[in-house]
Image 1 (cartoon, rainbow, N blue to C red):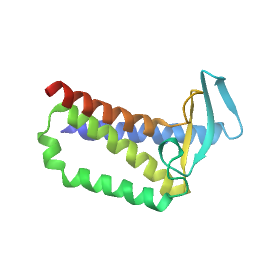
Image 2 (cartoon, rainbow, N blue to C red):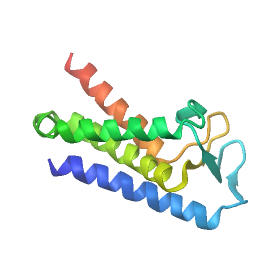
Image 3 (tube, rainbow, N blue to C red):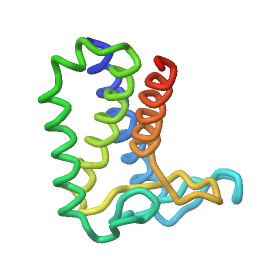
Image 4 (cartoon, rainbow, N blue to C red):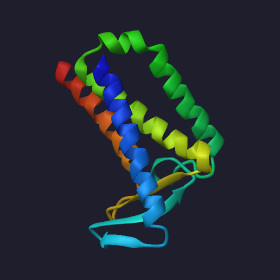
Length: 142
């Protein structure tokens, strides 16, 4: 079960450190290769892809519900296959990372821009990867 906590904590730490670095060094700047990969500071008051813009209270409650469900299901996660533990760890770390931003600033700090996709952060990446790990594990079992 250490895997679950280790993955979640590692994601949370990487997310918050990356956002701190972006906040301290990229305000008003853009670095990288435009159209391929650039890093720049963006305030996102919504969820993924800009959905639910300015719904910060709703998104905070949604994140708290997710965290509560994970803790309530701790014993089930502990007994679950490894892919569930990795997936839930990724989801939890990402959700808490963005929750911290919403509580501190009222928005989420995004900074990874690959041109054709909305700007995102490491927490968003972890959430998507967590869902993918769980989906692939479930499909593989069938």
